[in-house]
Length: 209
Image (cartoon, rainbow, N blue to C red; front, side, top):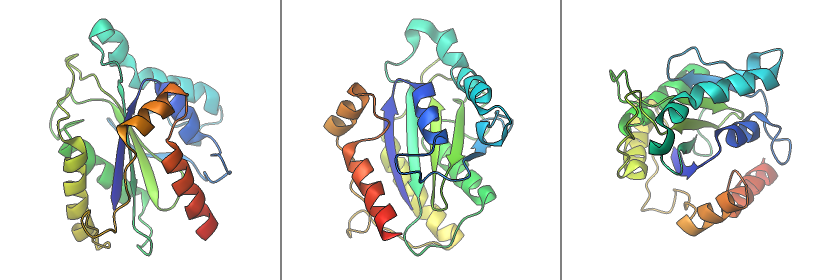
């Protein structure tokens, strides 16, 4: 199971991409599998997705608006999580559990913390989800995200064991290379939701499929 973490500034822009058809029409049956309270509006299951998308954006950005100048410059936290080739297909309930493990481990929304950040998990393919969080807590402080990628990697190793998935190791060449900071900055600067490395990686996956 491979996590990939980035940050950005446009909640709505990222949601539009995740709920859209994808660059090669690869997004199918887009829907929520989890959220901070279990009741977030789901554009993928609504008769008026554009209106619901605006509602979802407003709900995620509520604390961002309340925090004002105290909001981080890059207030959108985005983590894609993908199973390894050959793994069984996880159910929506299992992906929800994966998302909750990750937001807890990275301090996005620790278990039992009523002030955790708002987050959602979107599924638009069989083998992965996207976790989107806004980085302002209920007490309007910023979460401590030190070593969030390492923590996500560690919890993914535990999830693999618990769910009977293929065990990956960053040191044996089975884990994917993550985009560099420069690649992520360039993608953000040019308004793209993902880096060129990620776009190419997805194109290869689609070609193999």
